[in-house]
Image 1: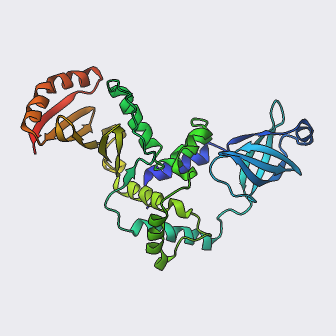
Image 2: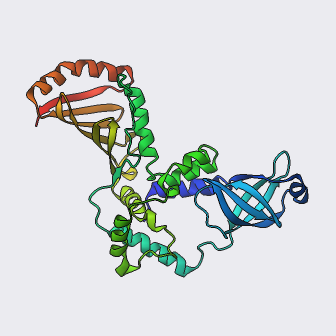
Image 3: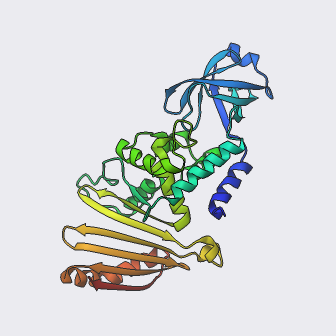
Length: 328
């Protein structure tokens, strides 16, 4: 049975219609095409990320298209408008995955990926840079929260949802291009190891519906859908590593969507407080907080500042239901 959030995403894509593609073409080409006209477009080459040279009606033009598209790919398109700009909609590829054999191969590959051992979905920051560049200034907690959300959003785990947003005009092509699905540059040794695990049951080769470079990410997506949890690790500010885990209650287990329980855990080794573990549980509009520190002085310091933290959360509209500080 497919996860309900995946089904909802697919339904959203289906209902939202086809994306509009604006072409850069000469006046002569524009005058030859009429709204409603259907024709084939052949991808000639990629000019730059997201920008392709395409041949339509015997004429070359440039279009911005989502994702990675191979040269020689043929798309079925329809002219939406030729004024003020030449605009197309994409109907489909001329060689979609449609046969039972191809669908079975895709299902088999996804099943094999889901069956591979994965204790937890671990997303590692690949930029090599801290997500918050302090430049010697005090850390702004609100800006840090936005940077963490952006790092997780751009991890590739939610790419299909972001494609649905792109179709609705809620996300730009430039935003899509940031994600790993459009940055096919992965560690070769890890890919070969994963490919070897898949080989006995139907390995991913050049004919695979999933690029070899993305197998590990697709595996993480499948496990996130199944377990409703993920872990991010990376540098939050220069010199400071953090491990951040998020877990959500399955939608079908909650009486109402707003009743879902969410928990998040963070582990840091801070220069003054030492090893610190924080767990927050958000349920029915309230937060339960547990802090654990290895140093007794750090425990005392955190206890002294708990009332101020409770007031800050209350001002943000998030009541602190209970809190405790423990020594590990």
